Amino acid sequence: MLETIKETVSFINSQTNIKPELGIILGTGLGGMVNEIQISDILEYEDIPNFPVSTVESHHGKLIFGTLGGKRIVAMQGRFHYYEGYTPQEITFPVRVMKYLGISHLFVSNASGGINPEQEIGDLMIIDDHINLIPNPLIGKHEPEFGVRFPDMSETYDHSLIEHALRIGKENNYPVCQGCYVGVTGPTLETPKEYQYFRIIGGDAVGMSTVPEIIVARQMGVICFAISIITDLGVPGKIVKVTHEDVAGVAEKAEPRMTHIMKELISGL
Image 1 (cartoon, rainbow, N blue to C red):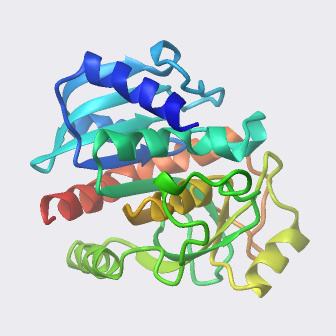
Image 2 (tube, one colour):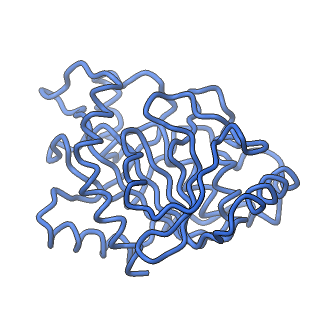
């Protein structure tokens, strides 16, 4: 995998002069954040050697280079999921590429289902921990250049960035909380009993992404921040039939608040 990553990085470096300091991954319905980026170059996933291609509606499939909040960034407009048939290693391949491009921080967003009774649709949840129910991307042959075999996950999400994000939310009267994200395979949305189970084991929100990306980033020493938009509720008495279009629609409406928090965090680094 190491040689494949370096081949991809070499190609990308031949297509842009931007040397990114930060990486951003935009989830379902959240691709509009690119409007805040001063864009220098855009690469289609299908044109990048060895890159997977997004197959999900609302995931555009573009690698965007430019500046945001005064920092050089690379942003994934569209990500990859285990349920698309990709291996955990393929899902996280772009994160390793971003590390070799030079990023020190990774900012991740997603749309998720709320399982904390105090949450409402449209709330923002700053992720402070996760429970991984997706096959771990570090399973398999170990490559020492990527980091240690057994990465510590006691502080997976950066505490100072979490505190700063909560302050930004409070100052702007945004509905912001913090909590634990449960990563599942999908693509089925959860049953009522699955929601109940995820709540019992300590979850506050559930989704089908993010965790593999974060695991790989932390193995490689990248500082991580992640935020969920609560797009539907898995709380008894509030569970209703939900479509992917419903999820994307709620995410798009809440996106300006998420974008403001991310931009402020990036500016403050």
